Image (cartoon, one colour):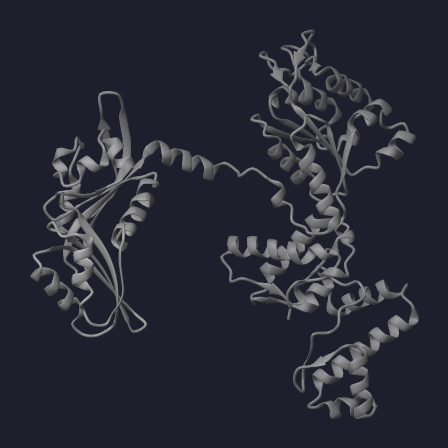
Length: 548
């Protein structure tokens, strides 16, 4: 029984190798089915598939071994071209769209699994068949052989068991000499397009990776939240305003795997007389202005999901008792109703209040406090994790530059120093606003400290800002104030003088004395007129990369 031999040969590269191999095989009455040649590093690799014509492997080996400059020879199982074809087939069959191509005669040259499924056939059985043998609603792809193109044309295939709608795009295939060598069609399922559009239009779920920070306080809080996310335990998120408690709550909901919705409510934003009806709902005619159909509360709407009670410390004492009953008994009654309604929502609370002080002031129920404070998560304020500022800045700038279609921006060292010297009463929310303001105002790709404006600086003149800075420094030791002033004077003198000697003369000190003071304050002179890379203040803001 005849079999095909696949051979690998390595030659020292020279002219005539392919001709010698082809002639030798032909003289021995063997037929070459395919041949590939690779030339690299002064070597020539030949991959040959031949029909043996009854010859044995030993005979073929002896025959080809007579060719000059042959260095390696072996029988192989698969040719490189076959490997590439298999890889191409794997890629093609894993595309969700239907793809097929034809040659200039209209015969199918390639078809993937999705396209074959559309017409109810095996892909291998369709290769070589004319396109008109497929049960398509049209054959526009044939018109591409004359150069026409079709984009997202709505099509439909009706089979005995289903009706499939898709959008079809057809293009001619052009070779290296700009001649049409065939055509290709790509079919996109309408249902897949709808699902894709839905995934884009709906907001992406917030996860713990959306919380930016590498500080150990944030890592510890995130680790705890991940552990308890999949449980049904009540979580209370403690932290100052602007620290990101809402993002943490959404991440816990996403990590819980619950299929129901995430329902947030700011307890401080609703009037006291509306808060109860919003949380628990009401029956028809429960009060003046109630709708005839009644209304479910947010606890009911969050069934199967999570309800986030932000600023829980703002809930009035009377309503706290009803909230405690709902938490403990997993049921509630609508306003004006008598029927018990089971609730399955996971409860997440948050507050920036000192609940312990509110207990002492009798503004918060002790039993509710102990019920919700089982697993408290504390989010550190920004002033306690200054090392996260560079990460947050990069994150906010990337978002802003993408949204505003601006070139990527970075902060200078002076700008970053100014950020790190701030107390951040508004926390991450304030930082985001400051960076957004700086990005919009600065047209350069380098944002300097002049564009870092805090709320108290907006509208102030340069002189007023200097007065504010001096006022903020009044409580610092005299030595620190004198060093700061000396540093500013040296910087100004160097920047406005033609040389260091001229700067020293304007300051009334020697050239050597100026150099000593430059070293003392950690200043580096880049040119005769510029000082850069000042040493960081004691309140350092770490960064993994140079900022200027």
